[in-house]
Image: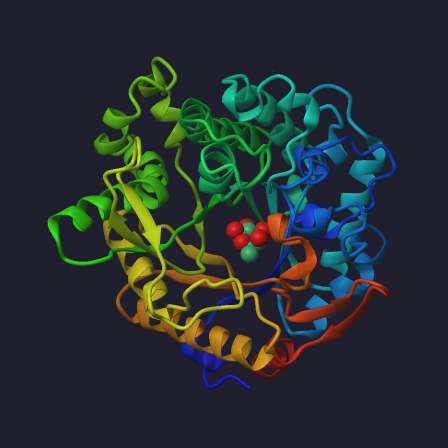
Length: 435
Ligand code: FCB
C-alpha cells in the first residue's frame, strides 16, 4: 500500500498508466509495415537474446483485457502510442485501413470504459521505408511526420483527450544516433546533430498539422533527468554543463526559449544542418502541456579523453533498480521545480516513471516516494496535473528485450497471462472509488 493519498496530489489530478505500441502490440499482420525496431532487433548484438516485438504482449488481440485492467485499477487515463507503420506502412502515401480500424477499436474501447485517451504519435517505431531515405537525419522528415500527424488529427482527433508528438526526443536523437544503443544504432556525431534538430522541427511541424485538423490539448514528452556534477571541482562543473545541456537543455531551451544552448551550438557547429536557426520559430510553437518522463539522475565527471563532449557519466551511490538506475525521488521534485521556474507555466504531467525490478515491494516504495516528490513540487508552485505509471504491463524493454520488467501487471510471455502485482494493487487501493 502507499502512504500517500489521492488527496495529497490535490483535486483534479489525473492518474494513468502508460505503454507504447512496439513494446506491447505484436500483431505484425493486417498490412502493418516494417519499422526500424524490426530490423534493428533482427541484427545480431543489438538486443539481449535477440528478442523482438513480433508478439510482445499480444496487445493487438488482447487489448480489451488490458483496458479492463486500466479501468479496474482505478486509472482514469491511458497513455498509448500509435504505430506509424501500422497506419502508413511506407511512412508516407497509402494509408492502411486495418490500421485505422485497430486504433478506432482501441480508442472507442477506452471511451466506453470511461478512460481518457492520451495518445503519442511517435514512440520510436519509424517506418523502415523512411529510414531508407535517411530517417531523422533527413530534414524532409518534418514533412513526413506532419502528414502522419494530420492523418491522426483528422481521423482520431475529436476522440483523443490529449496528444503528444514525440516520446523522448533525446532517445530518438542522441541515444539512437550518437550512443548507438537504440535503433537505428548509429554512432556518429553528424547524424546525431541532425537528428537532434530534425526531431524538434518535426515536432513543431506536427503541432501545426494537428491544430490545422482541429486536434486539441497538444504537447510533447521529454525524458529529463536530475543532472549533477560528480564533485564540486570546476572541471566536473563543466562536465555537468555539457551533460545537462545535451540531456535537458537542448530540448527545454529549444521548445521554450526558441534557441539551443550555445555550449552545444558552438561545439556542434560543423555538424548541425545549415540555417537551423531559421526553424526555431517552428520548434518553439506554443503547446498546451508538457509531459516529463523521469527515471534517474545523471552524474557527470570530466573526461578530457572524450572527443566532442568532455565528460563521462558515472554511477553514484544511491540505491539502484535491477537495471542499475539510481533511485532518486528528490531529483524529480527538484526537476519539476526547475522546469516550472525556469521554463514554463504550462500544466506538467509525469507521463512516465517506474522501475525495472522483480521485487515488487521495491516498486511500491518507488511509486510512493515519487508521488510524494510530485506533491512536494506542487507545494513549491509546480503545476503538475497528472502521473502515469510506466508501465501497465511487463513488456519489450528495447535493447534489454524481455529481461527487464517495468510492469505493474506481470505478463507470462509463454501464456500471455496477466497478473496484477502489488504495485497495481497499491494504485487500486489509493484510487478505489474515486474515478
Ligand atoms: C523510457 C521509454 C519507455 C520505456 C522506459 C523504461 O525511456 O519511453 O518506452 O522503455 O523508458
